Image 1: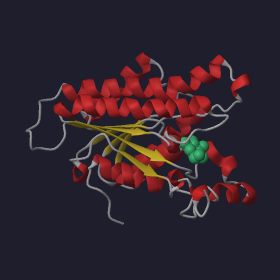
Image 2: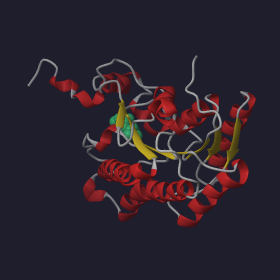
Image 3: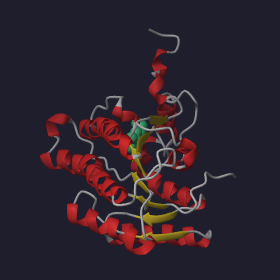
Image 4: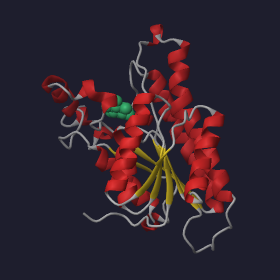
Length: 271
Ligand code: BGC
């Protein structure tokens, strides 16, 4: 299979120890990037992170594990130092880490609200700020040269589709959409590209109950006109393209990778 060309690039992928983030880390490494594999601190997550790093090395790529809680300012500073210390620079941030804490609004605790906003929105802000500082520390590129740096937010179809019982999650992703577009507007003159990829239902641990029985898969497929669940590589390939110079004129864009979930499939022949 042909990969995008990311040779020479250094990338940080947050939440890269499982699911979509893991798929992105593997794809970027296959495309030639050196990858900082971030996951939350803790035994299970660190073991999964080490496995991702090993898988990349086995395939002939380069990666390093960097556990950090991206909702904490000091952890984020440490995470970004790994890229400069180990790989002498940074070209790409993939702001992927995200969590869900579903609850009916009348029962949602402040901890459930804050927990999701802290990781999905504040964490993305902290990492985007750190990446911007790293990009601005390098010499300005020629106006007709490639970008000085790239930030890719992993959002969700729920930046536009309301989500009952996941108000905290949908609110965080709506926030990510405006954060991404505001930064794209702010940073384009500095030749920093900022984009988002918004996945629909992708087969990962976060949404296993939505696909791991025939009944739940059938109700999920009713929401996906293209007729199949997505796989992490569907998202990862889009990220690799957006990160490459082939997408040099793309900034402020959101690419929905959702098999048509945002096309309101319930309206087909109805309404
Ligand atoms: C969520 C998944 C969900 C998908 C489609 C994603 O953002 O993390 O749990 O299956 O949106 O609803």
